[in-house]
Amino acid sequence: VSTCAGAPGYLELQAAQMLRQRHMIPLSEPQRLCEFDLFHPPPPGEHALPAQRLPRTRRGRADALLAWFEACMHPTLPPLTTSPWRWAGAPSEGEMEPRRSHWQQAAFLLEEAH
Image (tube, rainbow, N blue to C red):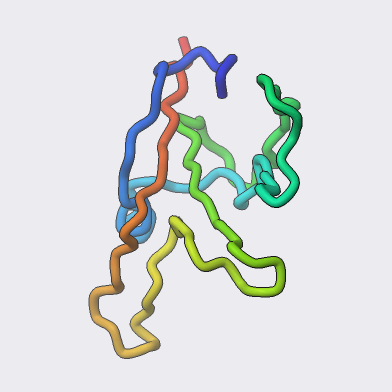
């Protein structure tokens, strides 16, 4: 994202409702961008991530990249902290309005195509 010609920062938003109401339509399935192991941190200094291609599953023009996180606090337990991009509850679970997550997602806006 640091070399993308777009906004120099990100927007925080609750993506689940926007996705549910089709204000945003994913063009790709979720992909793992990076992984950090805080039990075995890398040597000090700046580290660059390799560029990745996102496999497109739907036609359209990308306006933003949506990012979220999962934090595993113990190697044998499921994620305890997360900023899911979808609602935690579902109507099938008896909820009319799904719950909002405390954590928001980050939207990195991309430059408009000319």
